[in-house]
Image (cartoon, rainbow, N blue to C red; front, side, top):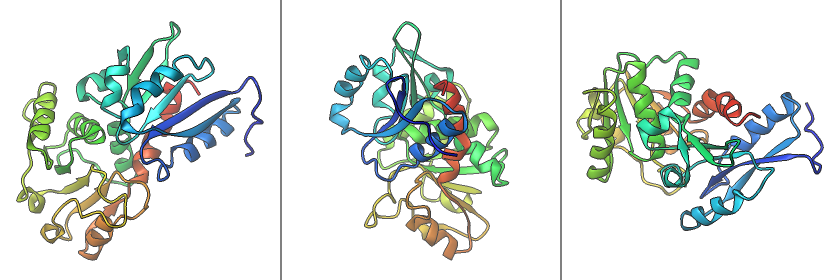
Length: 265
C-alpha cells in the first residue's frame, strides 16, 4: 500500500534515540499509517542524551507533532519531562512513548515490557512459571521485568554491572510484585529457563558479550531486545550451544499496534 502524500495538513511522529540508525520503528509505524490511511509520517530523531531536555521543550511548540517514541538512552531521562504518567510507567520508572494531551501537556507510558511478553507468546514462549535471568536494569529492562512479573514468571533475576541500579529496580518492582524479583548473580545463568539481554551490548560489532555464554545449555531460551543486527553475537553463540533463540524484533512487533493506538495514529 502506498503512503499518503505529505502536505500542509500532515502530522509528524518520531522516535528519539542515540544511536538511531539501527531502529526499526519508523518502518513498522509508517506501514500502520499507510494501512490506516492517516495523513502523517513517522521519522527518526537523532538526539544526544545531553540535548534531550532542549529537544523535548522545542517540540512542545510543534503543533502538528502529537507524540513520539523513545529508545536508548532516553527511556528513563524522559520521565522528568512528562507531565503525566500511565500506570506501567509509574511502576517501572521508564517511558517509551509520549503523547500530547488536549491541554498541551505530555503523557508518558511504556509498552516495552508488554510488547516483549506479547512477542514471546507470539513465538510460542510463555514466561508464566519460568525462571528468568534478565541482564540489565535500564529503561527496557525495567519494563520487561515488570511485565514478566505481571505475567506470572516464577522468578526474575535482575543482573547489572552497577549493583545499586539493579537493587533499586528490584525494590521498585517488589513494591508491586512482592518477592518476585531478586538480585541476579552469574550462577543464576545456569538455572534459568529464559535468559534475556536487555542491555545495549550487541548493537556494535566489537561489543563484548553481555553474559558468560559458557554457562548456557541447550535446554534454555536466550532472548534479545536489540533489533539490529537481527541476530546478535549473543544469539549466534547461544544457537551454537543448542539454545532456542528469540530475536529483539519480536518486542517491536508485540507492541507496535498498542503504541499506534496510544498515539491515536
